[in-house]
Length: 263
Image (tube, rainbow, N blue to C red; front, side, top):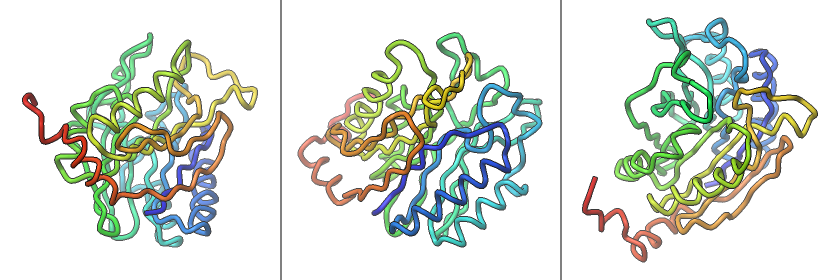
């Protein structure tokens, strides 16, 4: 399965960000990718009010993502924001194309390191997997990476690979934590974890402020926790071939899912 991770630097303009989705999806499809993953907050960067840009899943932004996926014959996974009844928004992944049209609402909200995502974002509650070309892919978002039980739940639902869009918060040791956690969750669940972060604004001379704007360093971790491919901090497109057949071999050698005594 060929997957592209589009490490973009989203702006506060949803229309401009759609152009990034269109351009990177077309480039990924030209390189043979069947799945294209964009970061969390692709619709609009963090650090601005999200309620005015939030749209339902049948709104114009999501509808255009569907058209981009259909036009290129790929599954597109991208972060957006949808409205809620309580005045907040939901941090949502749209997953569309190749016979899939669904979404995942981020379960674990980033109330850490002095940031309170739950002030403006309502949590989701249900793990989500999708089926593409005979493969089961799990969906997770950013802060979810700190909760191994979610990744095991996705594996229990058949996932051989977990797609993790993110907009990781910067700070001392945060890049090291990012890589460590992606590798650890891959081992915990014996899945591939494909983590696509926003590019680092500082790489383009942009002050991110206090909002989690991304640090780059998108990566692919194998079920044994080996980093197979990665990017640096600038925007870029990482196209990788994921050997999903090796997941069953990993689980036979390292049967942590079968050996569980708790959870």
